[in-house]
Image (cartoon, rainbow, N blue to C red):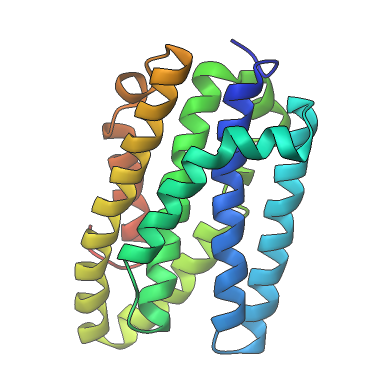
Amino acid sequence: MTTSDPRIVSLLGSLCLSRQGRLGKDMTLAPNMEQKVALAAMSAQGYAMFRRIEEVCGMSDEQMAQLMEPTISIVDDLEARLRPGDWWERLVKSFILIGVLSDLSIEISRLHASELLDQIGPENYDGGHGKWAAAIIKQGAEADPQLESRLSLWGRRVVGEALGVARKVARIYDEQLDLDIASAVGLHPLLARHGQRMAKAGLKA
């Protein structure tokens, strides 16, 4: 299967739009202007990537929206369940969730949309958010051991929810497309990359 299948491309579009939505929300709550500007730029890049995916799909906004609805609803449910207590927790939540969604997108692209992966490049799937957020989190964690412990604990809760989202999304599209995303992707690569990200952020997975 290639990028000509609109259902696969719409799945990737929905994951991209979910990431873009998180970045936009974070931008409004960021504690300083430097972070607001950085998040605004990443959010804009995420929307541009979504439009590029939409062009590949060759569908109207209305058609794309119908196919994306299941994924967007699942991510929205997580947002309602998992509410951060402060900016640090919000930053870690986005760091983990965007990372997992980006990893899921990359794995699905490798399996079913390799042409799109080649066009966009796997390093662009998170819009640079992972590297940016890891540096900020690590600086805070190194300066405050209690913060490091709190954010590591919070991160374990977040990744459990994020992996649950990945499983639900994979199952829905497996049923619709008669694919096997859930078992083909699996949790091992997602967990391995999560552990690497947490280490770069100075937190324990």
